Length: 337
Ligand code: WQD
Image (cartoon, rainbow, N blue to C red; front, side, top):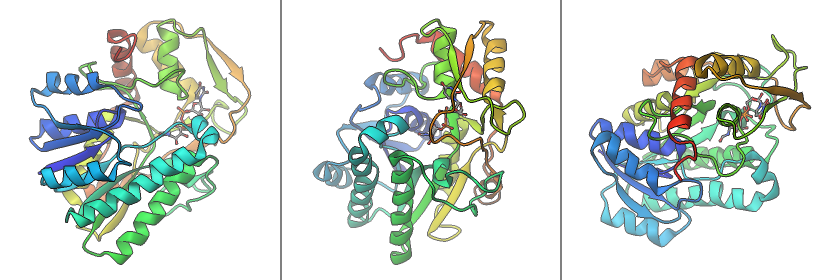
């Protein structure tokens, strides 16, 4: 099987490309290094002894997409390439809509013209907004997104659903990720955010290595067990394997399917900080700060549909996620630089 992985040098893309290469699939990557590094590609080859085919460029470049489809006999596409910073999306909404929606439309269009019929889309639990029902199943209402990033995922999902309804021979699987964290167990690839990390685990690990003094806990007055926000953190390797399972089952249950990829467990901000201290052996200072705009109290998944249909479930614990984050952070204190 030959799989086109857009954004394959990025955080989730590189871990997924690795799992595909490990099981013997052929991998073609397109990436423009907007928020990723060519070093990640070298590391992939170091870990698994095989190289993906690589095209440097932008998924918004239709001519390049056409060239890839004519040069490679692609069976399936996993579309990761996109912008993912909530705060940046508020400042640059059009860039988010162009990269996350327009480019998705173009890839599907070019894929269909090239007779590629299987498309997996990276979506996010953010499409559920502030959930009325917890744990969140795929039947939960979507909408109520609070920033252009979230809205771009919601709109792209809707467009893909409309396309699938009109094109029954084109298979689409939408994967809604909860909170991906961790790194490959080798410590050779991991998350390397541009600038100051927005997300909790990358920020905590930078505090642990002394890059920042303390973690700001955004609110301790939520209606949760300790007042801090609860999330469903999932190891990036489990998430990557979820994509392989989705590929293996695409089209079996209809030409459009949507799955949550989460563990089904919720952990608070304090749980994460305390576990990270225990695992790293480093004291982590924190201060309580006001709530962050757009945050919800609790967001964790009911992942049972993915188990029933894809035969996939997350295997790794919060400790595994934090151990691997710590390994990646200490082996690569400056990320890929
Ligand atoms: C987790 C918890 C924060 C940082 C976001 C996007 C989502 C997805 C993943 C994908 C919350 C708290 C955080 C900090 C804190 N994006 N926190 N101090 O907000 O669940 O999801 O990232 O590409 O679409 O919305 O993840 O890691 O930012 O926050 O207290 O410095 O940690 O309030 O409760 P979130 P997160």
